[in-house]
Length: 264
Length: 327
Image (cartoon, rainbow over all chains, first blue to last red; front, side):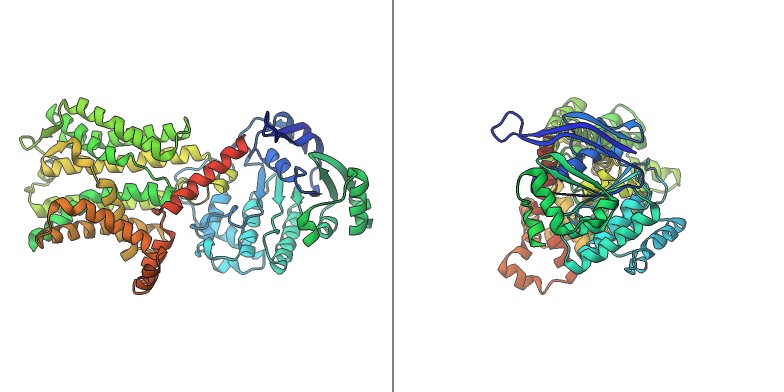
């Protein structure tokens, strides 16, 4: 279980541009939850995920993963518990290294790395198995540098890398946003399959309202650093995109203004 | 002609250790480490002092290499713990080393011809005399050993973490690696090799001099580029072997130039121009047309070369990104 209590985060403190990016965030994520997160521009969605991952320190509040307080741990010391994928397909894989080398790095998530050979026969078998699940045929191209793969293939590989060690928490920050529609829906399918199979606790930011309603068992909506709406699976299944946008307007008092959501 | 080949083989093998070190930092770690310009003569100075003090030559060479590793650690600690810019950290160390060398030797240079050198010592164990060929053979064995060890290391879990630090620092941190440590480790290994190179050089030429490091970095970069262009590929093993062969080819070209009557004082300028040309050709119109004549590998290297300013900017950019977030 992941517990966020009273998280506050300011940017540009003591300047005219001071922003309260996270405003007293309280969130309890139950084991196996697949939460989709939506919100307007600058709502603090990415900041929230980065704070949980430890990429940025929070100003106050407490982050607990399964009872352990990780608020002050640096990113690399939380990594064993948290798998994370960014929007940018370049960000979550190493282009110069081959697929098998990327996977070898990922399979030691959060563990000590020593002087044992990285790509071994038992590991290769594991990599092939994990890649076969994606259905992209990458298991036959293990020695190809990742830089030669397409954006969709790289994000699918990133998914495999992020979930191979079954982290306690998977953070997806619009991981399909930079892909073309076909690749995006493919990567979303793979995401759902992997998350369901391993019952991974997941937080997924998306700008796509329809995606937000279709995937996961819980939906939260953010606005100006606050969580303004938190709905469970029953209500979520009944909602339509139009109703969701109307709900946003009534909760926030403004019109939903995510430019990417409008374009999507 | 024989002397050209023998000379360039010997020189090329000695400088191959340095080319390997520079390959590790510049190419694989993406860290433009300028320490090496000081590490090379430091390795020589420490070895020279040790030999004069009566230390066993082999141990003296090891001390020189260790001094190099310490210099790398200084740069690494400055960069990772004190957050000094990577290039500046290297320059600071290299500058400080100048004093260390003068203090170590007590004067700007030390002649060593009166003392037994490491080649004679090692060959003596096998009852061999110190000839050009036997010295080259000794160097060759040591180079191959280092090549094998590096090739093994870069394919271990830790070695992959080092390479991933150079390829995608954000990713490897998200996978639980403290990139400060991988950088520090790589800088120590690389500068150990450069110190070893300096130590072996002073043993071969019979003296150590505080000025012997001037321009060696550009030469090492040129060697690594030559190696990757001619023998390279993306595989790490190829890169390592390429750096060694590139170093030999580079020294061969220099020796050939000397033989053809080119004045030795022009070499550093020509090397710098050569490196500049290789790096910038693909960016220029004429270059594009000329580059079509180059083999595909050469063009690829030019475009993706980590040695280019653009690639150096990439790492700086990533760091700035991190800092923005820290605010």
